[in-house]
Every structure is written in C-alpha cells, then in structure tokens.
Amino acid sequence: MSDFLDVSESLTGRRWVGPAVEISRAAEQIAQDTNLPPALCAVLARRGVPAQEAASFLEPKLADLLPDPRTIKDMEVAAARFLQAVKAKQRIAVFADYDVDGGTSAALLITWLRAMGLTATLYVPDRIDEGYGPNAPAMAALAKDHDLIICVDCGTLSHDPIAAAKGADVVVLDHHLGGETLPDCVAVVNPNRQDESGELAHLCAASVVFLMLVEANRQMRAEGANGPDLMSMLDLVALGTVADVAPLIGVNRALVRQGLKVMSRRERAGVVALSDVSRMDSAPNTYHLGFLLGPRVNAGGRIGKADLGARLLSTDNEQEARAIADQLDHLNTERRDIEAAVRAAALAQAEERGLDAPLVWAAGEGWHPGVVGIVASRLKENTNRPAIVIGLDGDEGKGSGRSVSGVDLGASIQKLAAEELLIKGGGHKMAAGLTVARDQLEPAMARLSELLAKQGAGNAGPADLKLDGLLMPAAATVELIQDIDKAGPYGAGAPAPRFAFPDVEIRFTKRVGDSHIKVTFGDGFGARLDAIAFGAYDTPLGPALESHGGARFHLAGRLEINTWGGRQTVQLRLEDAARA
Image (cartoon, rainbow, N blue to C red; front, top):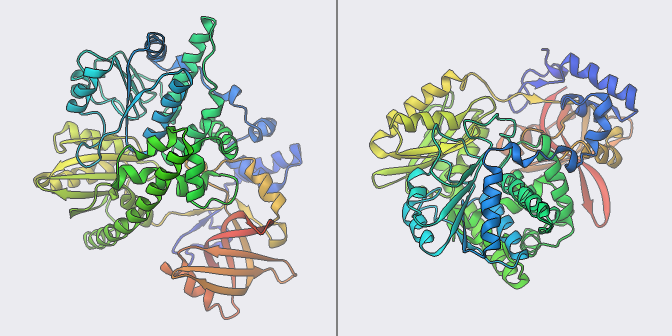
C-alpha cells in the first residue's frame, strides 16, 4: 500500500495510510447509488456498509439490532430468580465493580427496583483493601442479611467468594473472560463464557444487565404485568459502554446513540449534576462520556470512596447528586495529580528498560493502584505496545494492563495465573488486572512478554495514521460534519473519520497553555479553517507549525463543530502534519 500523499514519516514519525483501493471503489459506488456526500460515503465504505443498507445504518433502530436476551446462556434463569425475589419482596444486594461499567450496571438494577417499590443494598469493594471482584468475607456478610446477591461486572472467576455466600442465592451478570469452570451459583450470564458463541462478546456489563431487565420485563408481560420503562435507562448503558471502551459496533452503536438522546433530556439527577460540574456546554457525545463524565465517576473507585460513582448514578435526590458530583470532581483533580507523578516515573523506568520490546512495563513502590490502569493506557498509546504498570506494596504488587489491537492481553494474563506466576489475574482482550508476588515480578513479566510476542506484539513501529480521504477547506462545512455524525457515534472499534487537507498554507499560529497550538490555514483561494492541536509541543508538531516560515503543509485530523456564543463553526482537531 503506497503512502497517502507520499507521507512515509510525518512530523510525529508516522506513516499516513489512505483507504484501500476496494474501499475507495465501494465509496464511489455508495455515492452513485445514494447521492450522499463523498466524505460520508468514504466513512460508510470503511465501516463495510453496502449502498442498499446505508439508509438503515444512518438511522439505526434499537428494535432491529437488540439481540434476543435468551440467546445468552442462563439469561432466562437469572431473570426468573430476579423476579422471584421482586415478587416475594426478598432482600436483594448488588455487588458491583468500582469502575464506570460496574457503577452503571448497579444503577440500572437499583433504578429498576426502585420503580417497583424496592430498595436494594449496594456493595462496592474498596480497590486497595479488597481488590477487584467478590471476596469471601464480603460475600459471607451479605449472605447473612440478603436472599439474593447479584454480582455485576465481576464474579465470573469468583468460585471461592461465591461459595462463601452461604444461605443466599447468587446471580452473576458479567462480561469478563470466563475460565474453564464456572462458580456454583444460580446463573452466570456472560457473553464471554467459554461455552458462548462470542457473537455478543463486545457487550459491556451494563448492556448485559440491560438485556436481563429486558428479559425480566418480557417475563412480567407474559404474566400480564408491566415492568419499568427501560428506554429511559439507556443513558446509563451508553455511559457504561463508552467508558469501558466497548467497541461501538452492532447493538452497542444503537444503544449508545439512543442513550445519548436520553441523556440530552437531563432527567437523571446524577448525570445532570455530573454534567454541570464537568462544565459540559453542549449536547452530550461520546467524547463527553469518555473524557468528562467517565473519569469523574471512576475517581471514587480510584482514590476515594468506592461506591460514590454508583450512588451518584442511582440517586433520584438532586441535592445528594450535586454533593456527590462535587466530591467526585475534587477527587478527579486529585487523581490527575497522582497520575502525573506516577506517569513520569513509569515512563522513565520503561524507557530505561526499552520501549521496543513486545511488552512495555514499569513497577514502583507505593504507586497508587487507582491510577496504574490510566498510566498503562498512556504507555500503550506512546509506544503502540501492550503495557503493564504495577504498584508495589509489601510482598505484592497490584497492576493493570492495556493492550493494542490484535493482541489478547486478558488470555495471556489468565495463562500466567494458571502457570502460578501470578497470584491472580484476569480481564478481556484490551484490558486486564493482576496481582503478583514481588519475588515473581521479573519472571512473570518475562513470561508475559514471551506470550505477547507470539501474538505479534512488538513488531509494529509508531501506529500508522489511517485517513479516510482528502478534503479542501471550503468543503469542511457544519452540514458535512452533521452528515458524517450520522454514521457515528465514534469511539472504540469505530474510529472517528480523519481527513487530510493537502498543500495548505499556515496563516496564523498561537500557542495555548503549555503544550497546545491554535492554527488557521487556507488553500490560497480564500477558504480558511481553524484548527487546534492538543499536546503539540510534546512532539515536533508544535514547534514546526509555529516556525513554519511560509512552508506549505499537509494537515490531518478530525473535524468537529465548535459552538461559541450560539454560533457554530468548523474546527479541525489537528493530529498530525507533514511538509508538502
């Protein structure tokens, strides 16, 4: 494949890659058959949408895409036991993971039960004291006071803790990779069980919980009763899906799209309070969910009180919601400071070890367990390699890992645990957690590197910048962006379209803050466009554009609508550049 615009090494060291010939041909065919804008056709072609399905793809209907919940094993049994508890007014506990997916999953159940006049007990384990997932003391204590314990976003590998819940029934609603055997309980509903087909492997836990509630409502209807309104709960499903970086394909895309519409109605006290404290000033989109709301919900589980996020999302009290949202906002600021310190230390250590190995890893004394996952993400992004970051405390280290496309980190971590090089570990393809004995750290990481190398990790250089096509500044209109947005939402598994603006002149630059740059560029025929590049001075991009000296450049990035003072203008989120 030839380099797009002949850019083999951009200012950030990347090769630019355009659409394959067959994708370009498909885009031309879609344009001929539908009269849709060529830029939108390029996006549809990349997504594999044939011309005859373009209209339905641009207006996805949840009713057409929602899978039958009963196709997931144990679903009918789980919903039936849940309804049995509801009818008998049994005591129900929800044991949730401390991240956004766990919080949204718990909030779905609590909201549904509240609509039925029931109050559930929420239990979220402390990240540092208890670690991920159910633990025997907590489960035993819950079992004494409850008839049914529902584990959400956790529990699939928790054989001993679930066995400790004597006297109570346990239902697991999860999506993490399952082992060869399942815990002994009423139901384990998980599209990533080893005996599942894998067709719904892309669902997050909140979607699994939602499908269980769909099945519960269906069973109620069969008996002549109506359950609570589920469509109004899709804002929670959307938040869980985006924050857990589930791929925005198939039903996930429809769930998020519909969920964003629900969220824009500002009906959930916790989400409204969180949006306000995050200073969201426009209709919610996937960026807001992933980078404004998600991190704040997560902040409680990372460095504060573990149940704050779930409590915020499930409360219907506006005053309580505002108080918790403020608390989470402060915690998120604190989390950023802690993260910055750990990131600097981890990057220095990883660089010393070498950034070209199949695995990039770092471990440090007292690194906060609540930020190691975020730092692992940063290392992965910087190196285009799987990354593990571990905080050491006493004889053990607790760590988190993030992977790159095509490398299954969760399976390798599970293999390491089975080989007893880890105390415990699990996760899914793109993210995993682990606990390792201090004296096993080096051999465990060496073995993990070996396993990841077999999957091809470490073979890649800097990630190629994939582009959907060329645009001229005059063609970048608000209307075009609105058209392209119809093929969204964009995120994991469905990257936002990127376009290149060829051979443009830089008309204006301004440094913003410590590391960002604003640019105005034109094509020499009167059309101009504004752009902003975040973190540009952390790379050669900022200095090169600032001192352009009249040179012409190819610019690449994502188009977005900038709203200011009620006026909408087009802005390029500039990601890369190359000398023309």
